[in-house]
Length: 149
Image (cartoon, rainbow, N blue to C red; front, side, top):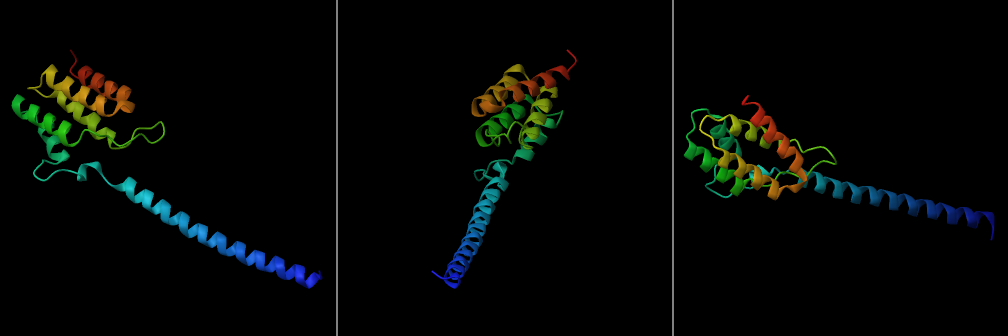
């Protein structure tokens, strides 16, 4: 084998390697964009027709003049339509969890709430999201401590 043949083989191998790298970059980008699109979907947008939005339900819970029946109905809808919290981001909670935490706080501070309504929401969320158990318990403690009782 001459030096020219060896250089030609090395050149062809370099071109094939470059083509493979380009192909891998395009395939990798397609997979990551699909994953990021999947992560960007909001669980609140996956609601059955006729159901109230999560923000509407939070406003009902936040309103101090909401009756016990309205609170109970809002919590039932949250449990029925929005029971799942996004998975944790490593050891950190998903930013969406803060909405559930605030809802728990509002529920504890509501004038017409009862322990049954509070515990129903807490138990349902823990059952559907066991990875958030300690965070949900902390949210409940903060809500109850905010009452100053």
